[in-house]
Length: 483
Image 1: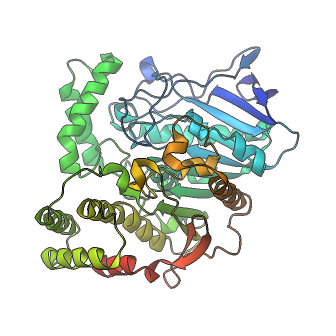
Image 2: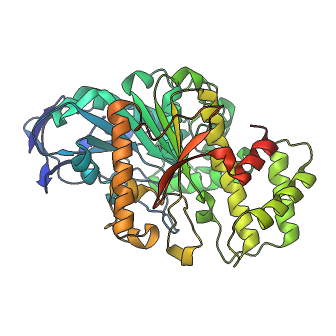
């Protein structure tokens, strides 16, 4: 299948009714003088460019962990995207732009897990999955600021210019992301340069809380320079990755987060995304989380004594500047042990994971939704992973194959489950997401969230709406965190 875009002619491949255009450049090669610079327009080419193979992802360290997928190949020349659309004729299809996660240091828009073919065919939409620069390349201001965020905006500009060539509607673009991709969605909502380029947003397992100050970003760049034995512009990829690792180890405790993240810079992000939440409330947003997000990061074999559990809770509550961490910690322990089902194989570790899920995921999500004030729909994904004999529960990233319908990717069925019930839930999720993309709101059975009606759609074998504070654990945290 051949199309014409602003850079030249493309030839993709068609399989089972889906046209795939892979490895399409949306910006100039980010090598040489453009290594740490904001993206420039892609070069034009003559003839027909074959778009049948995925391009490499951004340079990144290897990944290890259940459900965590690394890139198959990497290169500094990484500003490419993949397009999935139905091979049938016709236009005006909603466009979904997928921003991959990975903590701003990992990930690959070309991962087979993010193949949008099933979504495009089943819901008559166009799916676009770009790469963007990560780590020191994307988020250490060596030359220019927020380069990785600028890459995402460049991909959205490309969509605005070229979506129609693939049957898409450039006036109906939904930006969607998971984890740091969801945080990126909130950053894009806060960016006056990005907001005109999309019309709806979906944030899966991430909100607006993971943003650095300008001073923190400058500190990150300074430490990275000190870790290098040469100028950053002269370092090779392995030297930069080694400096990235050392910088993260030095600064993570001080930043209480990965130091390689977007920062308030004055133009792309003139204000913290949380402070800009109400400004972007005219753009409809679905935002949600998985019930057991942090189980992915707590091993079932880890030993946590009663004293260690209370010490952990007191430390985390003190970080939230609560007046009485010891008394509140004891109250939380009593609540979890008596009122909430937890894994009896290792109950203290399960409480640690549940508390981190609350503080790192639910609290930022609820605060962001409340700050927006309107035009927001909440969900919670409750389908449990079968991995590690059920320890993971509805853990981080387990919803992704349900959004794309890609249970046949290697290892995914063991992580996310499979079978008729999984396929049925996947069809429901694809339809919900696509309906929102088309109409700017979900079906009527899913009411909007508000301060007075904190309703949330729960996604599992049964799909139903509940109020968040009808859950006694959420209600307790509402009281403790004063939200």
